[in-house]
Amino acid sequence: MVTQSNARFKVSEIQLHYKNVVKPNDRPSVNCSTDAHQIFLENWDSNIIELKEEFKILLLNRAHKVLGISLISSGGLSGTLVDPKLIFVTALKANSSSIIMAHNHPSGTLKPSSADIQLTSKCVQAGKLLELPILDHLIITRSGFYSLADEGLI
Image (cartoon, rainbow, N blue to C red; front, side, top):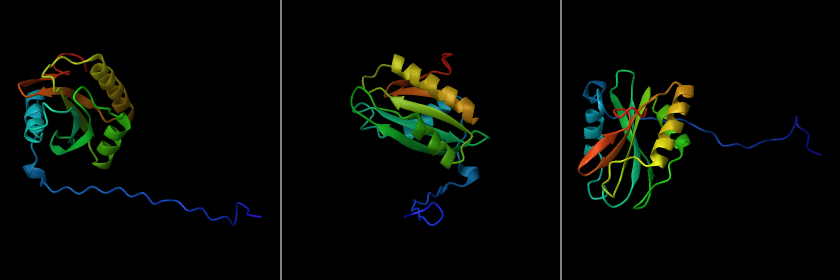
């Protein structure tokens, strides 16, 4: 008979690891949606922007300096599945103070879908609970971008 006191439980060890390769003085800062759009665009594969939808996050420190960019999901021509838990676990691991979300619309339309607005709202609420604010959500196409924050949707 195995009792609680002499039972052995095997569990996995979980470690958090974040390696920053950019010196603090070399990090770009984000002061507006145009800054965020430019940084995302420079780090987006231009061969994919009209081929498949991708969802990325820009992680910022307290001074709005960029800590990094992370691909959260990659989908098909008409959408990608985004799990908010992956957004926040990534931001927490990077010791981020705020987040800017972005995804592309391969169709070229800049208008947010109802799913875009719902996801943004859900993430904004979660960010408030975690004191990890969502500053913006950009929709990116080859011809431009749409900022949900600039349009008053955040």
